[in-house]
Amino acid sequence: MFEAFENKKMKKLLDKFLDIWSVAYAGSLLGWDTETYMPASSIKERSIVFGRLTVLAQRMLLSPEFRELVNQAEKEEKLNDFEKGVIRVLKREIRIFEKLPPEFVEEFEKLTAEAKVVWRKAKEKSDFSIFEPYLTKIVDMSRKKAELLGYDEHPYDALLDLFEEGLKTREVEDMFGNLKPSLVDILKRIRNSDGYRDKHPLEKEKYDIEKMKQLNKKILELFGFDFNRGRLDISAHPFTNSMGIFDVRITTRYAGYDFRRSLLAVIHEFGHGLYELQIDEKLMATPIATGVSLGVHESQSRFWENMIGRSLAFVETNFDLLKEFLPFLEKYQISDVYRYFNLVRPELIRVESDEVTYNQHIILRFEIEKGLIEEKLDVSELPQIWNENMDRILGIRPPNDALGVLQDIHWSMGAIGYFPTYSIGTILAVQIARKMESEIGNLSDLIHEKKYGEIRTWLKDKIHRWGSTYPPKELIKRALGENMNVRYFIDHLERKYKHLYAI
Ligand code: MG
Image 1 (cartoon, helix red, strand yellow):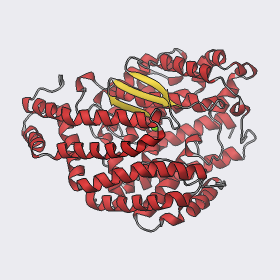
Image 2 (cartoon, protein in one colour):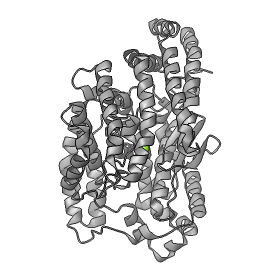
Image 3 (cartoon, helix red, strand yellow):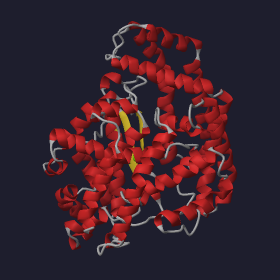
Image 4 (cartoon, helix red, strand yellow):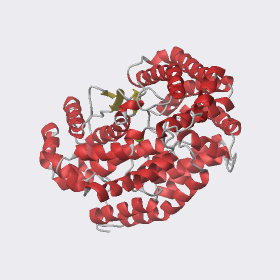
């Protein structure tokens, strides 16, 4: 173990870290179970366990003994990049936990564990007032959290940083400011085009769930998912959960119709899973053996979903395979499936929205979160503000809270500051594809020639193998030779949808 590390003090530190890592590993497996097979009422005990495990990890991380090991290792000369990465990640975690008192952490964990259950009920009944008192507490605690953590420019920075190391409110505002005019313009042109349709016949086609499961497995095999180190299961909301780099589990859902939702979710989660699976094995069970940030993680899932799964080349090369498991496709052409995968229309639900409108959903959430943290907005106003803004941005108004303000789980989990990472990932995915093409050839050709191994290897070398060795912005700079730039994403939309909708 710890072959990537030469320094003796570092090895001692990593050995001690195994205590913390093991608690996190167990918590992660419980987290997966909670979303897949746990009986509903078990949450009563499970929420206590989550609270205590977090406190346990915090106590071990903050123990004088462990901190002394970090300090000793940090003082060593000639640390390699992996070793420096370990120090950076541990100091960051210690700093975060140090600033949040254990009572605060436990209270927040318990509150959000219960809030998740309440949110589910509120969503089922489509009644925001059921969730409102919990969200009010979560927002209050999040404001408190920002103050406890500290910040230079904006309290929301402190929350963003928890999900995307070093990300600032100002940068998110710039990103969306550069994006918005193009998004509005492209959507307008599409909606005014002759080819615009607000539905597609394939959405109604019913599939056999067993056959769909087999198809999903075939696609995972085609892409090179290692079933000896991972699983595919079912959950209401698809997700990826890794215990370590040798146990990476993904999920999808099966509604029985509208097959792209199941398939594209599998492809998306494959991207997340592959990132963890391709981390250098020599980093196993260390603090840097995990994806570096949510934005970089989402860039991997979006790369596979948008740049591969939604590509014409993917549909062309897999049309026969799709027909084998989805016989209704006999009535359709390749171009129908391609259009179905890339149907643009204003959508109430974020996770069902297309590449053109997706970021608008994130902008809405970002502006609400920022308003809440700045205390310019009150939780009680959210349903109204949500609906008015959906109408203003996309021209549609949610008929109820379930299809509006209650649709996402994130706020119930206390994850305020999370949403902007989805946009970062969506934008980076295009930029990564362009860089890859400049080095190993046209993506469409690679897909046609089924050279998924070459794609995986490129991603591994540039991004995956490093785990959290470098902070996210540095990793991107190293991999792409430049910082994130929304221009690539806008050009991608322009080119792709100019062709699809003749705009
Ligand atoms: Mg994702």
